[in-house]
Length: 381
Ligand SMILES: Cc1cc2nc3c(=O)[nH]c(=O)nc-3n(C[C@H](O)[C@H](O)[C@H](O)COP(=O)(O)OP(=O)(O)OC[C@H]3O[C@@H](n4cnc5c(N)ncnc54)[C@H](O)[C@@H]3O)c2cc1C
Image (cartoon, rainbow, N blue to C red; front, side, top):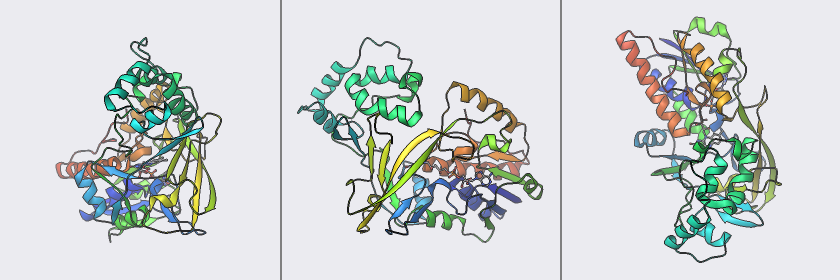
């Protein structure tokens, strides 16, 4: 089969690789001038620091097959994300843990005492919370909510937590021990030389051709037996029903001699600080030594046409529009919509790879059984 894959990010690369290994001919195009999609990394020309160009990416998974898949293309070194937060004049440990609670409230509580204390802070009068704000107040009370959730969420999503659904905060966001590892997954790490060589390795197969700086044009489908689309779902249909809402990010780069903040990611909880966080990239490669440092202040805003879509908004209005595009996609033959943009969902890298491997398997199953490949393997709803 001649397969066209739109997008040379993780989705396109992983599907392409699996189909190429099965004997199919894969043409992968990307409108950008590099592979890797949003996982793209490159060395900063001035400092030599490995940069996560589209925002910090930490690999973490419980999926053993995905972990051995990525390790077969590059060397991963141990890395755990330990985020800090500056709020209300102090610096605290995140996610909220026993250290955060003791420092924030100037106490020396043990786990059981802290549990009872947080329960006493929580707003018990809220029954059946409907909004993110109510849910947070019910879980942690007003002081922690205002320091760590309110301002940050307003900056990140451009609206008040009282306009967001309670479902965003599913569990009590507090740990009653000193564990400050941001993720719970068994396998966590960082590729020694960044993500780009890993994705180049995935794409390195004689049956894969990669064309960069090549935006999709409809005539390309004529030469293909099947298309895998990892671009924006609404973009495939020329935004015929309007645009699905996204948040975009602006990164303000600055350099520093030495160590600017002592950690990779510092969140800023206060509303009057306009950025959400500062990333100091050299701390993602603690095995490297660099005198110079390069940091990015991260600002979030509503995506306009021409901006990079980062985070799907997925509130009631967007979901209604999404339903219209799903119906259009399901009525389109010969195209499967994949990845974070093709299915309008936030997907971590391990989930993206898992879904890409499963998509390639599903495609080959359909071929073997003479069935039509569906528009989606994972439902965008
Ligand atoms: C700020 C941020 C931080 C993140 N941090 C983490 C993290 O710490 N850990 C983690 O596991 N995951 C993280 N992720 C998620 C990770 O970025 C995604 O899992 C991954 O990028 C999804 O890959 P993809 O191939 O589906 O999409 P993308 O990487 O977006 O690739 C899609 C590609 O399609 C191309 N394309 C689009 N339209 C067209 C067109 N019309 N013609 C040609 N090409 C087109 C684009 O140029 C792009 O290269 C983060 C995401 C964001 C936004």
